[in-house]
Length: 290
Ligand SMILES: [Fe+2]
Ligand SMILES: [Fe+2]
Image 1 (cartoon, rainbow, N blue to C red):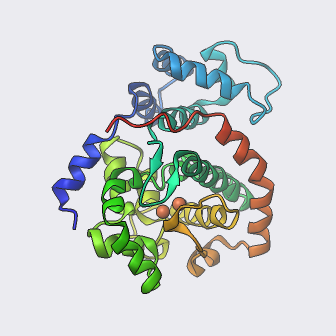
Image 2: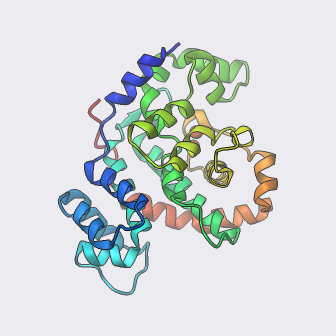
């Protein structure tokens, strides 16, 4: 069993989110922030600048005009979208080459993260949400980030965990909790806190496997969409880690979202190309330090 101090130590040992991403998160929460504030936060980071320009000019966004400068990119994308891209660009290099225990490599894990990010957003559009829950893309992107914090423990105990999964037919996330005392959802909430990420991100990380029992202070809209997106990503084969096979949409979520399975599947298949394209825009698996 992982003692709370051990989890805290692992979370602390994760590479820090780059300063620019932190700064952008803070700016986003301040209503007085402008495009120039964003520009000033991004420009000192050459990797982020390069990534942002590459992304904004990619076919994914299909923008008519080309951005040559950070300022133009921010203006074309808007502040929220800029933060979402910056958080993706910051996370990708932090992924370790492999996640042993989950039996997945960085590329596949990343594809899953991007898939859930894109699908969370598409589902919300499909529902006709006029105002999309804030930062849904980032919440989807980081829903499984807790795996990065507990991967070493999962890999050390992988035999006992898999025994539960295969022998007792326990969902992987429950087996994590049975054997380790914490699961990747608790760990994700700890990472979100350590990285000072927005609350929506912490909620999605904490409750994406148990959306119907999320406490009342949680924005269920975010949690439900990320949960459904996660299940759809698995249905599309974009989440092939051993812990997340054969996932079904919680009946409560289905009811609250009010989307039929056929509609969900349509959204999923329409998003497939975008997911692959977006995933390929980032370099992953450079290897985390810790
Ligand atoms: Fe998960
Ligand atoms: Fe997931």
